[in-house]
Image 1 (cartoon, helix red, strand yellow):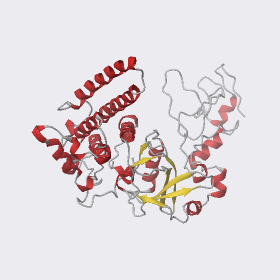
Image 2: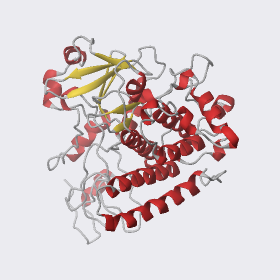
Image 3: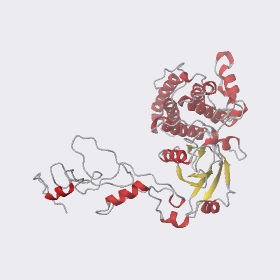
Image 4: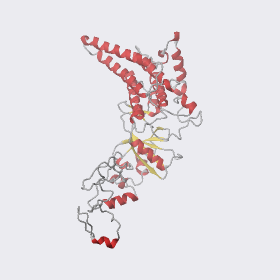
Length: 441
């Protein structure tokens, strides 16, 4: 056995029996050197990234340092919201654990998943009453309502089995989706891949899609306050995808069917981030999207950009204030109203009849002006989603201020009215801009 004196620079005579090669694990000046995967790098030297992100590594002093980011484990139905971080190995076992990590990735260790969900389809069949509780047909396959054994209600989306996307690409995309969290996005809470069948589990939205509320059999009348709140929520969801997500995400298929509402009528964007290889328009082969919402520039150049999403959002805004289906000539009505009489825009001609009861709020016409800028045929003349969000936020604040003014004493009403007038001037300046100079690539 070799023994080294720390710091004296001399080595044991046993070195002669093993040749003059430097023994692995010894420092240049003697002393036992920590294994490479446990050693602390010299000052000023860039630390080599962790080779195995599933295990916490220790430094030479034995202090455990946490990983920068936990390994994303495969989500199972038994622990839908869990993400597991592996703890530090026991003393003397670091090398053994690292060896295991080299050979295979850690498997899901949730007790519920191991005991109750060995075959993912068994609990799903029970939770969806043998896949009969259908909520609707999405771009990638049917969506079912599922009541799990824990009582949690989720939405189960069964993806089409003829997808050309490989399993590795699918799991990479799911890993991306799991990192996108925003109050105005429908969150992915689980998935499973079993014998070629791919299933995604999302949070359940009890009020269904915006399209169903506007045109469905169970359509209902929406107040102006509800419509403005929905527009506000959607804009924030898209803004997060474009400017908050890393890397940025282009939705590519924004439509009222992909806007879902929860029990409190708050809107969330769905079906974002997934590959659109199966989403083809029936009228123009090869294009990905939905007729009535597709950017005209995309149809001519076959190139999707963030401004393509802005165009689709503009169509959704017009849906909110007109209740006209885009696949039934909405743009024709918009163009006719934009011409108007005496060269003026006349949005009142196409407004939803439910908004014509009583006096029409000025904010309705202002929102129509914002939407019209979004559907400009030239992408350069469309605003960025952050500008649209800012305009809608001002409209909403203006609406709330007017509502508060009705309950204020007369002495304070004059101040509130001045604030409303100031906001009106700001919104008029924003909506009257003829052309925007692009500020982003």
